[in-house]
Amino acid sequence: METKTLADGVLAADRRALARAITLIESGRADHRTQADALVAEVSKAGKQALRIGLSGTPGVGKSTFIEAFGMMLTAAGLRVAVLAVDPSSARSGGSILGDKTRMERLSRDPNAFIRPSPSQTHLGGVARRTREAVSLCEAAGFDVVLIETVGVGQSETVVAQMSDLFVLLLAPAGGDELQGVKRGIMEMADLILINKADGDLKPAATRTCADYTGALRLLRKRPQDPEDFPKAMMVSALHEDGLATVWDEMQTLANWRRETGHWDAARAGQAVYWFEEAVRNGLLAQLTENAELAGSMATLREKVATGHTTVGTAVRDILSKLNL
Ligand SMILES: Nc1nc2c(ncn2[C@@H]2O[C@H](COP(=O)(O)OP(=O)(O)OP(=O)(O)O)[C@@H](O)[C@H]2O)c(=O)[nH]1
Ligand SMILES: [Mg+2]
Figure 1 (cartoon, rainbow, N blue to C red):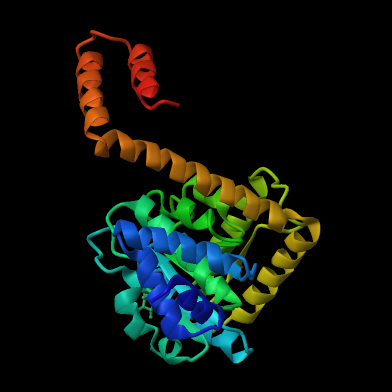
Figure 2: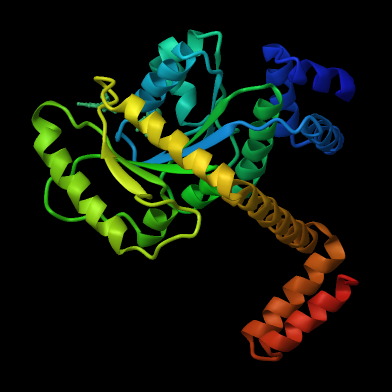
């Protein structure tokens, strides 16, 4: 199909066109890539924006249950919701929400929802680019909310946070009084920390965990992109659909504040630069492995560095000079 026709279909919110467009951006073929770049450029002209919500949490914390309940609540309110995933691990082939499509049964049948599993790729950089472009396509297709899920593994939280307007960390009630080993860096990215499973026997533990995180968040350095009282920790029960409306209220409060104060646009601009620099870095690295001559030079220089025949500094200058920068 011609790029323009596909772009028109996406902009007209045609689901099949959107699905085909995402398949195109996921393709590894060089001619498809050229087409995909043109497609993304074309649909981006419309300048449509969704609220992009990144959601991370360890396996079993209740991400799918939350997305299903939260998504259904939003579609019931008349909003259109897209769900995408960044799944860095090849072992969970096909992405976590593929199998979950059955678990997110109600949402996947909802005409106002669109669920797309993570592109199957072992390389996180590749998954990141494809997901980011899929987000743009969903925005162009007029979705109001795009949820981007990731299971918290390695760098994937950063990847998702860098393509989200709001970043949500889902946690389970802790048994002990420790802060579940959530890395400081991850906590610093969070706009909302949701203690899920705050129901039944787990309620007291959830209350304690929520208090712990409220305290921990207060100790973090104040971020310019936050109004009073953010980031904050809250309790929810995805299973009992408890607290979800409050979460949505808080998200809107935060998003509106950021829009009004210019932090929204500033963050998106910063993200665009981040992904540009990422792509340049990856492009340069690809040259060093894919171009036979450069790859040969790299091999030689690696050997020289290893054996002490040249210094790192000299080797770097040598290889960079070959790139004709
Ligand atoms: N009690 C209780 N159980 C929940 C809640 N949310 C999810 N669960 C249960 O926790 C288990 C895991 O939920 P999922 O939604 O599949 O978790 P997930 O984070 O998507 O897990 P992965 O996809 O494996 O990363 C299921 O048995 C859910 O029924 C909740 O709010 N309360
Ligand atoms: Mg899941």
